[in-house]
Length: 117
Image (cartoon, rainbow, N blue to C red; front, side, top):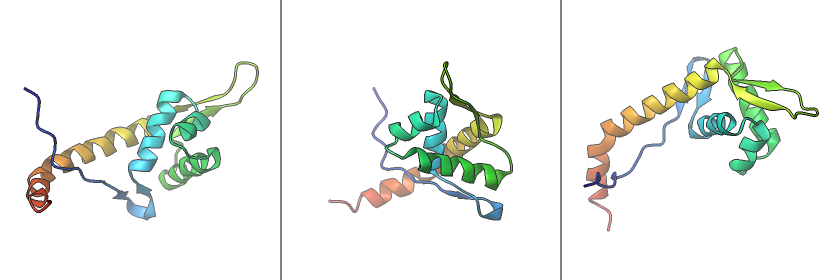
């Protein structure tokens, strides 16, 4: 028997000291960069321009004070991007907060769903 469909989910945005915001969009971008090995590839996968993807990566770097992505220049072998330890930590910590929050909110979501027709 499979688990029943969850009654909903939370969308979490973390507002860190200093004004940095980390939410599902930035985390998904980092995950895609890790998966594709490319900022432009991640942007395409998320239907986001390269410029916007780069701006979000730079926003994370400026807010944290350390890079979240390491890039290499193009050329005959092509360029690329990979997550730094900080980038990987952002994904891991955000997904942990998200999972714990969804577990904590399960009953409330279930109760609120009882009002839906």
